[in-house]
Length: 423
Image 1 (spheres, rainbow, N blue to C red):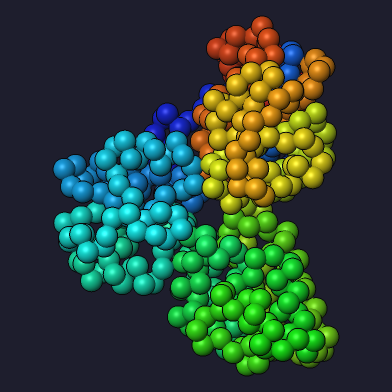
Image 2: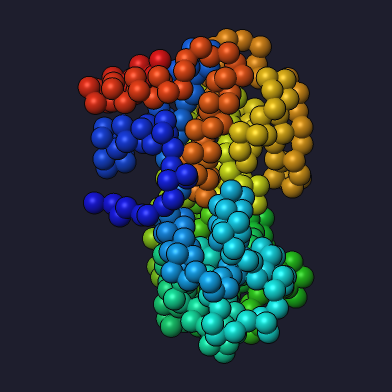
């Protein structure tokens, strides 16, 4: 039985929750990755099978709100954004929580100003060994309100195991991301560690393994992502690959396959276990499920796609990348970005900027919209985006009636709903 978290009701949805309930009844083992269909007459929404709050995010939210409830009158701090979602972080700040650092690690509140009476919440991304030690020296237990995602901790544990067996660690991640900084810090405690951003950087490591470039050339490209003692000549003889859990799981697998292939070319298949560790079980199941569901959503076809989530959310940006390869895609943080049938504000991850586009909706009715969201996006926000689009397109369906009818049909026949859609 999946664990139920105590998440504030204003993050919960009505329509989306009912859709997820129906899918859970029909597919309890989560084997069916096809999207759900909701029909609002003028617009049909194809909704990804898996999206929204994951285990780690719900766990983090529950702990953070419990910390607030249990410590009335005390100063409460988050190391940085708990998750990459503006609504969640804004609500915590409005309840008196302050951030100690920005997401890039720069200081907002000096650590010197902390006292042992203060409460510090560690975000879902985890934090570095150095920051844990700094809090401990202040008399603050960094583990008491620790919202670190269990799947992030799983990566740390595996990195430690690799180090004890003499393997170096290659981390697939973004060097400046909080999670990768934390994973790098924990990994280098036991393992020489190097970070690669993508397949292009992984290929540089492969070139070194195959003897095509020197250690100096490798350092020119990847030196900023190496632990202090990292010696390519020594430490790229025996490696394992782990990842920032919000990266594209397919790319992590491809990077691991690239490294393994290079090792086989140099050392032979019969000796591969002495040079390459199988770490596929460290991939976050939620990230993999969401990305696979998004690929099935795309394959089902749509006129446009809308991806909902915070603009600094790594996992959301990857969902956008998957969609935009095939479908005109708009990445919005909430329903307020959808100004009218003519105008939408949306985020372009590659340019790291919000832009405004006109004539974004196809000139046809009904239109089909593929819809998904990042792991840190409340389902309630997805509800509001969906209803905003339906309203703008002149749907005559009343949302309350839609929900009532949908719930009634769900109790009668979940399968019929998901085959025929809502409406």
